[in-house]
Image (cartoon, rainbow, N blue to C red; front, side, top):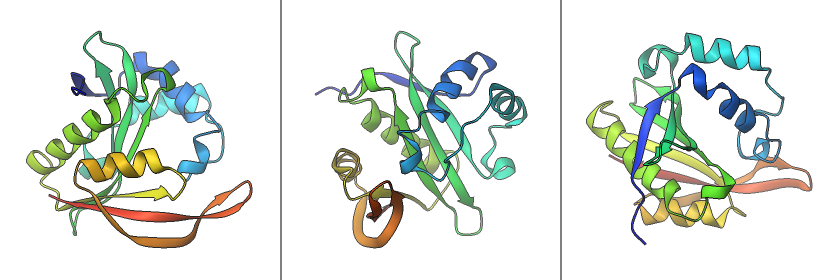
Length: 169
């Protein structure tokens, strides 16, 4: 499958509704650290104050757009550690665009940005063992995932192990 043509861009005020939708989707909360809904006001303040500079915000969040200028998803680097030059990868692709190569294309583009612009040394991702699609996608772009984090993610039915993936730039 040919990778789709995408653009990674900074958040704009026009992204408020999209960000609101993503951040308040409780099905995604088990994948991250958030477990509370966000108000439009809080998200508007976030968009307005985000500098899009990883050294200022310790994170960078980018909108994934396709060739038709549609918001496909969000990809971000969080928990940035400037001393060790590493950050954690996060990605969410809208349901209607999943399975079409957008996640892989977004990660490839983000890795290029991390290496060529941010000059990071490594990107890591933590993926629940049940999320085989994400694990396979990360492996397909060169992430290595040998370390299991026992009972790392709290789920409705208890705790789930996670795999710690690393990509060295």
